[in-house]
Image 1: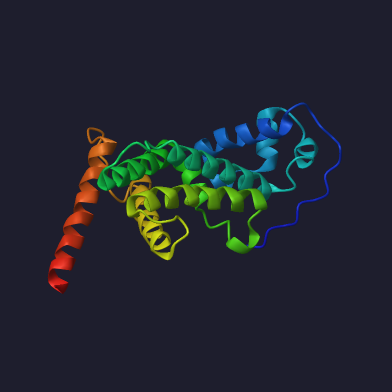
Image 2: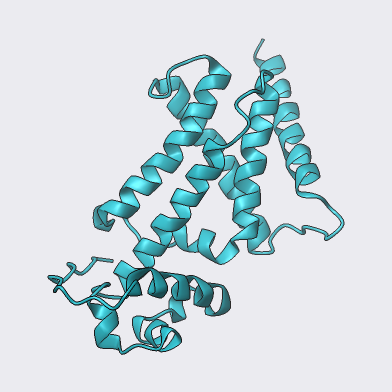
Length: 210
């Protein structure tokens, strides 16, 4: 989907309207999902005209792009504040997976928007591209600490991609109801069970290749 170019902004301002629109969009996102989210509906929620909203967001895709960028910044911050004092590599990986999975389950609609089909790499606004890269960068830092390697090395990039694929897949399957997540099952237990499955899988694999 080709992103429309943002129109030239005027000097029109209504207080802190831009963050108000973004906050209203996030509320509505949880209520109606991303496809029913429109600038007109968000404007009505805030109590301003559509024309006023267009002074801050050129179109719907720009609005939801800023919303997705907000999500990636929050995810990156959550990963950044992960307990850096942990020495055990397995526990570092566990905590990072738990942090990511918890964020996704706490913000299901926002999380699905962040990885939704409306964004392609060629059409990302700078804010969204930067936020996405920084979020993945925090994951690379954690993986780098586990592997005792620089975050930009190929081995760390490969491992970070594998880690992201695991947590993203698990979160998506639970959010979409493909995997049953009983109310009595704690998030920590769920992550522990799936990580143990990976451990068993790779242990078997390496035993077979010897």
